[in-house]
Image 1 (cartoon, rainbow, N blue to C red):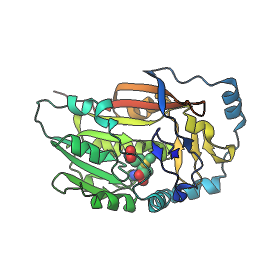
Image 2: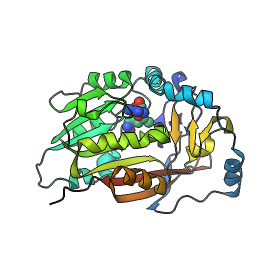
Image 3: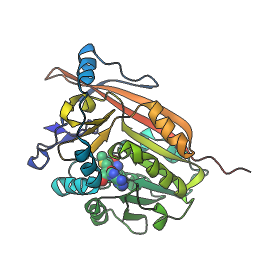
Image 4: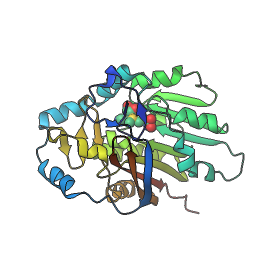
Length: 301
Ligand SMILES: C[S@@+](CC[C@H](N)C(=O)[O-])C[C@H]1O[C@@H](n2cnc3c(N)ncnc32)[C@H](O)[C@@H]1O
């Protein structure tokens, strides 16, 4: 059995995902977790490996990957259907903001899940909190179709639509300044670093003043980063998987600069360092995520 590369989430051995190179055996015990501003320290062997990986994928191939980003994710969902990512029930637990941002108990919240995939985050949320209306978008038409076909999809409570967040205006589907919370979960890492600000500006327009983007994604020196082969390096902290999808590994500084450049204010921006151990195999794997909250400034009085 394997887990996928985003989280310690089990994935059944499945021939349809054999092409993915960054897969990690199941680690069943989280032995250690801490949050903070300090990035993970590399072992001397890990530092040496990263220092050696200096050759980048050719410009020609990089352009092709950028042009085909949408196609590659769509093919990913064609191969894996809805089976790859496990439902993310941690969303409300870890982002208490979702509840805390209500000004009164029964306030209806409007959320946007940007880059929703097949709804692993969306549907648990809609089930857990009946007082939510959710917009959900992704640039993979197949992923959006899976969301719409999910038995829990209810057009009264949810609107799923296709959108390339780097190109297409969210205002075509979401009214300006209407969203209380935006979820950006393992999505920005899939976008070219030079286009990430476009995603954040796009989201900015639909957020209500004073409301937040909740962000979770790969952090610098996550185990998945160290497993990439040198031939898969696209740039600093940026890699390509065998299926053509890409992954960027964030530092807290990089992320803060990105959000602040678009006009957001920082509320929280922390590494989550986690060690998971499989006692049977005697393997210990360091996972690193960045979990953050950035706010659109409140309207001036
Ligand atoms: C790792 S998946 C995460 C999916 C979902 N957020 C979750 O937590 O299960 C990354 C998603 O980002 C989407 N994505 C990548 N680039 C995008 C873009 N430019 N516009 C919209 N969606 C994008 C992909 O199609 C994919 O569904």
